[in-house]
Image 1 (spheres, rainbow, N blue to C red):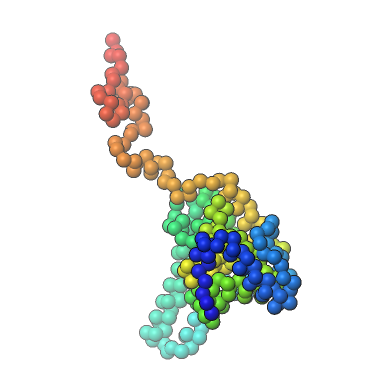
Image 2 (cartoon, rainbow, N blue to C red):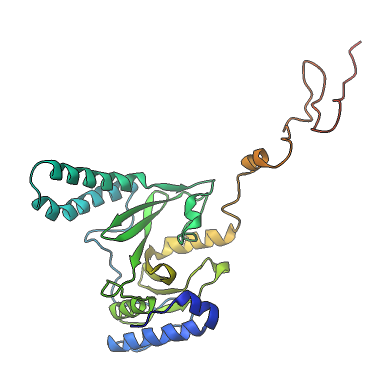
Length: 298
């Protein structure tokens, strides 16, 4: 099957991408028995008939970081169970113990808080999925070749983002087109296509669906051979998007206090105009000559 670089198509064809994916999602919806539906950008994503579910079984939004860690402790135990059955007591089992423990602790250590200062996450495709100075944080876990990012607001999980490899025979197929087709079949309807728009916080093309409380977004990261699959609480995600729109600024800007220290040239004393209580002198700004002296007491 021919592979398409969707990012390149966006640059060359512009909105032609919408038509291309529209044809794919409409065809998939028809094949699934649903009435084909136009998927050009509109006021809302199409609503799926069945509730959007989460995996693994029993997983849910609304968890605290501690609850999330405890849930995945059990999931990872199950992942390793077949491996333990194939080794004997001894060095190999100890190595498995260490690997399992490291993966569990790695999830706990992965916390990134989006406070007042920029983070390295700004240099990844995840930029745009979070806000600073809004009580938000993220955790992550790599499992079975898929990295899942967990996004929290006020200490509660409201969104997951799976970075899924695109490959022949893979869960989502070999191309973004394959992934959109698979999701359209799964949901029984074509998704809404939202072209990349930096002003709206989209660095890549998105295709989305929703149910009564959740939204699913497929994100085109074909240049990395990845499709991003996001499931989020609609109410919280919409409120956070509104917060982001109202607080547009440079999240990567250097903190003013740090900027003052690292600015080229002489460092300015913030108390330059303050009088010294003991000498009666005021501090001179760099390059201003001899500091002035107050009148001597008689």
